[in-house]
Length: 76
Image (cartoon, rainbow, N blue to C red; front, top):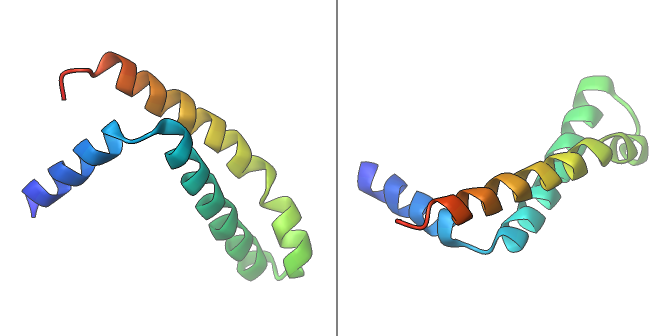
């Protein structure tokens, strides 16, 4: 199991930063929308509007972290 996790980590660290960022951000928007919908009881369209901005900012942060990691971790 440890080897499987290590292999997944290596594949992710070598993957394209932009592609991972898009997948991460879309998933984050979906998860945030569902959380706002169930936690607050807001209508789905308002929950989606509320859950849009924060994941977009996190997507930029994720891209920065992943591309920086790839640049400085050339040994793996």
